[in-house]
Length: 308
Image 1: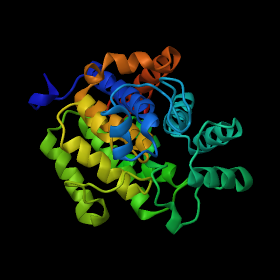
Image 2 (image 1 turned 60 degrees about the vertical axis):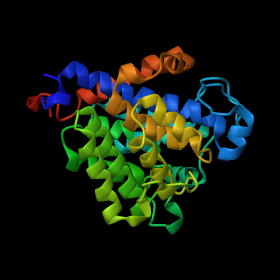
Image 3 (image 1 turned 45 degrees about the horizontal axis):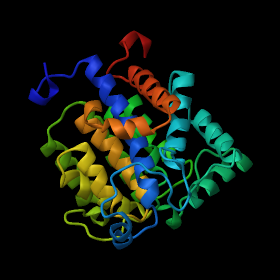
Image 4 (image 1 turned 135 degrees about the vertical axis):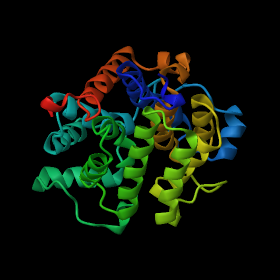
């Protein structure tokens, strides 16, 4: 039975949508990296409407090359898959090894949190007003897949992974909200229910008010989420959502990575433009697909009770 008609999605559909979440996030990252730190006017002057994965940007990337958004997501996903369960130390250790490898890009708050873990082995940074950035939200997708079928677990794990680097109420709230939208998208909930979840976030935290949002798409987590939700709820498909997101410029790789995860869950694997998928490194495509299937297979929804 089709989940869009009120039934429960089958395992194959869930796995494909899980793959769309991770692949959608990666193509968003690669697409948005080109317009990162540009203004909408600059984008229009240079290319009109940016809709192809061309590389370049301030990091001078190769076409299809991804940034810290995907790399940190991979750290989370690999740790879950390797341990066969939740492994916060494993995630932190992978962040530390990733940072030691001199990545092409890393946010200041993420760097500070990882360096603190390396020095003190502490799994939670202290509360900090400067931690209201988007670096914890951009790596949420694997958490949503792993906890599919248990929203309370998802919310708890979302905050655990967030506070490795970011300890701020708005970051926490954004992580949980994005996780919920990804989960509900995979499960085929109607658009009105996804909208209700977004409206609930705004009711609790008015900083996330997104209707008709025309402000900056900055790394401040409220700006990021307003950009993402405005694009998602004002468009009707995966490509349209991501094109609108990346043409806002600013922190476009991260806004598009988050939008890609949500839109991938909602619209599915077939909705991701094949030309965008083809632009990614084949090994990365294969790994993301494999990790998505493995991680969602560990979720409460798909894992047999005796294996929990």
